[in-house]
Image (cartoon, rainbow, N blue to C red; front, side, top):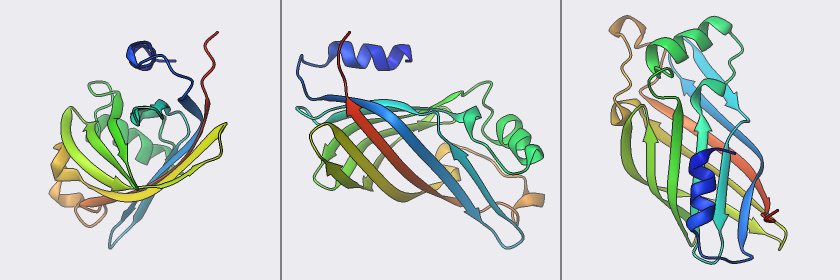
Length: 168
């Protein structure tokens, strides 16, 4: 588990209401005139404290897998610059049917409010959402020659299952 996540868990009030990601599927889609691009990431880590409703999700950006390895290389080297910006972090609070907080991507942080479907059954929490991210909001530049290949807004779909955290 990452240092940020452990620090987050440490500073949360002691409660039996902490949950950590058991499995996660984050997919993004770029629908463009010449080519649709998609990738999937199953390596996110994160935690939710249901008493405070605070959460932290950390996504290793280079773990997105593309059907085409050349696309994956361009994504990591040219667009997201994963050597400089290896993680995407979303932290905030769950309020009703929304996750409200700060999304940090490509070294830029923005406030976001995304709708979520939230199912809690005591031992597990399942969260799913679909939302869009504008590349310009995170200073991700697309060369003009490729503007018909890559959309300016990217659709993100997330499905994560959290399990109750048991301190060892």
